[in-house]
Image (cartoon, rainbow, N blue to C red):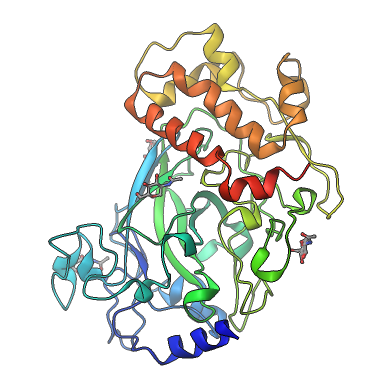
Length: 397
Ligand SMILES: *[C@@H]1O[C@H](CO)[C@@H](O)[C@H](O)[C@H]1NC(C)=O
Ligand SMILES: *[C@@H]1O[C@H](CO)[C@@H](O)[C@H](O)[C@H]1NC(C)=O
Ligand SMILES: *[C@@H]1O[C@H](CO)[C@@H](O)[C@H](O)[C@H]1NC(C)=O
Ligand SMILES: *[C@@H]1O[C@H](CO)[C@@H](O)[C@H](O)[C@H]1NC(C)=O
């Protein structure tokens, strides 16, 4: 009932400068305004649209300038700008309304508006956003099931500058780069059912692995969901490995059919862990059963674990990416996970849930790097492993 009231209030709010988009010169639709020729600014929410209208936000005819790419350094972090108006970003010079950045708070997503403009009732109501990648250099060749979410920020949209961690094992892009997109679905407490998608050109740098991403699957709703009276999580029901973005509430080619009060979101509810999605590669799992509420949990393959390689080969440079270089040199990384199961620490990994194992493995590897960034991300991981939300998903046994 409360939800219904909130939704109807939201639908009558002025839409002049609300919502949110990922802004960067590498994006499709960078200069689309409220009159190009219709109001299809990148911040406009996507719902009830035909495929051509929602896919890439209908901006495939507005590509970035040649040479503009969003760089994705393997194993490191990147900072994106997310705002409710181009004028609130570093790219305000090309905004028809000029600079509206908040001088008192450069991180303000939506200056002069409240947080309802970016659809949240507060920090605890954030549902996360993700970046997806397709290893195709021409956006027009990309199909919805080509995109795999490779990084998630579960506390998005909250600050204009939003960090994303790039998995260390991201392989290089083809000649001409890759195609990426930003995806966000907000909470049901703060607005109607809406998707957000902004495409952009991207390129992975500093790769140390050539193992491709696995074919992305549709994510399943598997976490605890008290708002919908589901108190227990069902880890066997999760989709593990590479997962597609959510395509929801449009007229064509949806892959999500959840109702208005149970939006698909980029967090533990759909097994999108906070941070890099390190298990999205063809060799990530040695056992990956079909998900079902009572299915067995998958088993992570112990491939080129940085923890084992750094133990035998001390790092010689400060770059975090170098921690996984030895992995690539032990052998040209094989796509078959089977021969990699000889390490003694696998039983520990196998006992735990896959995502806990991933996190544990990362924790083991990071102290070996002296780079400031690694320490920073280690602190974040520890925080992520604290109870709260995660506890409810993984500690059911
Ligand atoms: C956006 O507009 C600015 C200013 O007119 C121009 O310099 C830039 O090339 C445009 N970018 C794209 C991708 O069209
Ligand atoms: C999400 O972005 C915020 C703001 O930049 C950052 O503090 C946080 O560490 C990011 N989370 C992850 C998992 O990268
Ligand atoms: C992408 O990055 C790789 C590695 O740095 C580089 O060799 C390649 O030229 C880049 N591609 C584009 C299109 O910029
Ligand atoms: C399992 O996933 C499906 C598909 O997302 C969902 O409809 C169902 O409610 C989930 N069941 C449990 C017990 O998590």
